[in-house]
Image (cartoon, rainbow, N blue to C red):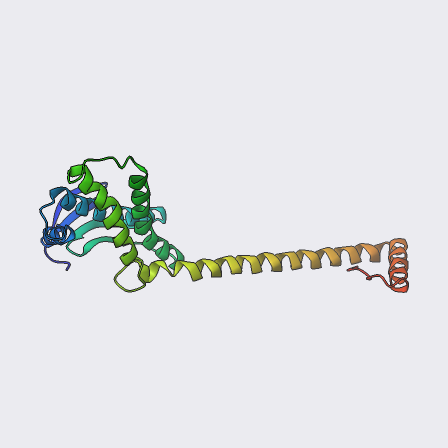
Length: 212
């Protein structure tokens, strides 16, 4: 649905676009009820979600072109050379922004008049937000979960690779240390003889001969 968008404004070079189907999405979001504040909450929730994507893109050096709102949600158009791990993190950006909003509103004072504007906004930011979060985490395209969950194996692979590299570096340092000690012993006959006697004593006493 790339056609049918109209650009409302631009902020920091990022365009805010709205599709002609967006009002239908807001109406369906409110279960076809006359809830204007719930409709407004729908637009805000979509923008808030894609703002999380945009901030993640900027954090990894990418460029955000625009954020669009349509009946089925939003879309953040961007480009940039990112790693697979960073691309998965961009998907988590929108999910985490929704989670932050959910926790913040849930922790706020719940004593609001039922049926009013604040009640509609609170229900949108909590109940509807939680439902959308659960759906968006499903590992199926075009939902964020399709790429977001790749962060787990990618991060595990990165951590395992770093651990293996550190282990190999320790082995290399240990080998260099042994070579240096042997060179020093070769240059010092007395130290070499003392080291040989110590190794013979360890063998005689049943002790480990040591790395030297």
